[in-house]
Image (spheres, helix red, strand yellow):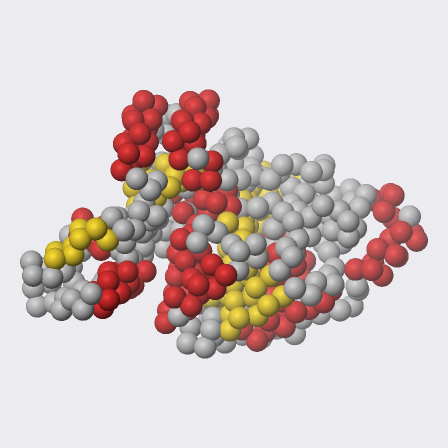
Length: 178
Length: 291
């Protein structure tokens, strides 16, 4: 209860976690490493009938480049700290942005939101994880692409990356997405 | 308002009570407090909006706060996410109080997180739809300086409400004084010992009944907490209904007077009364967020 963190990773001491946080800050800067209760509170809502403290993260870290992610994973591997990765974190009804286990570090990628490539003929898009359906829709409109998005229930604020990753289904005859 | 802050303080000064009891947490205007310069009240178009707003305005008036902006969503949050996201971008350095239905609350929380907001408090407020008409409030508090639990309980206990207020601290507040009980009248306070210390304040119910209502182990290691040495006299306001009381307490907490005096990871305030008022059967979610 006296810890300065709202939760700690399972089996990791506060001293070890201090070292990891220090290294996270060196990689990402102070502003992108969240450890205060008020900063982490929006990462605890699970929308399930279980105590939300069971899903309290120890920290949330906001990366913007692949190189940063590689370094963060290295730090976590060194200190044996479990990561919970989110793209937009809008998996509403299935845990949202909260980690599956108390004390995990949330690696939040919502600031990686560039649309890298969209092929209107082959119907694929190469996007960073933080791209939302709204962004992609706007891109289609702007570039006059005859493509149709099958948007899941969380709507325009969610992102396509994790939906595809988790084999989410869309409302189409084939139930496939995009 | 039946007691205003100034007359309360004058009276306490005149009687020497401040010296004897110690100053209440929001006694002096120049006391460092996280009071925002600007506050936005976001109303989601729910039935409770008007009552909540009335309570919020009363709190601002009682605390001489004039920086409250009110934003009403005509079509609810679900169809106006872009507008709110833009408003959050424009309202940096502001404290937001939001009132949402269950669905809107999730969207608001997601937008706030994306905007890098600091969530100070989130409360779920409901009146049961059965005949008991019991009020239940579940508050998650991230900032000890913006705790609405005791304020709300002190407000609700003025009327024949049957209620429970459960407040969970994401981080246990530091002990500010030896006073850990609730200063309302006829209240018995108890501490549950263990890895997560929990306080329960019961009025009109026994410890066993309180445990049953809060789903806590009655057989746990409970000890009585002596009544507080100093009285925490919160300024209160005669609300017409319980939603107004919530609006008043949440706004007062957002304006920063409600630092927690207890050191625990959670606490509950329970009040039972044989005579009950008919209650509006409503449920909603409140937020205090720094954008």
